[in-house]
Image (cartoon, rainbow, N blue to C red; front, side, top):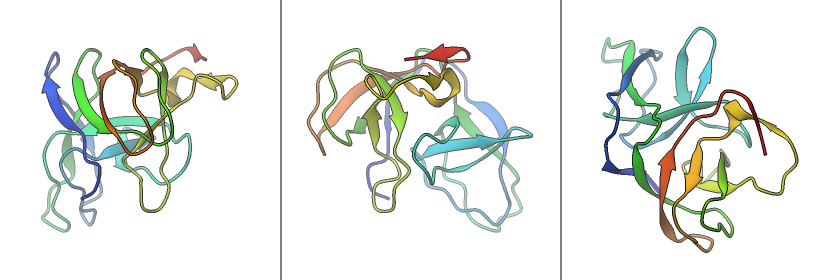
Amino acid sequence: MADEHVLQVRSTIPKSLTVADATGIEKGAVLKIADPSTVSGTTALNDLVGGILAYEKIASDGVTMAAVYRGPGDVFKGTASGAISQNDPLGLVGADGAPNRLRSVLNVGTLSGARIIGFSNETAADGETFEWTLNIQSGPGA
């Protein structure tokens, strides 16, 4: 898998969320969430944030629960989509070829807090790896 997120500091215990048995998702993938508490790989710009997959989910293995980091405070290394400045709020890209990259959502208008995955700990250029902190928001975000 390209651009997987690598855990640097674990501050929380992963939460167990529902996943489709037929779904295969690699460790470190960015996830979106749907009701009722079901996660899958992100597919679209500004998907509702599910978190980061803690362990690989093998397709059709009979398992329908997955361990997901949802923070707050877990620190990861990930890959930037576009320029990111230190402390920028981060959102999902979900595009073909780069579904696990994160982008700055500082200047994109008002987004629901549930569409912000966390905040950058350092500045990064497009395609560069950078450190960021998982902090899924629940209220209005920037």
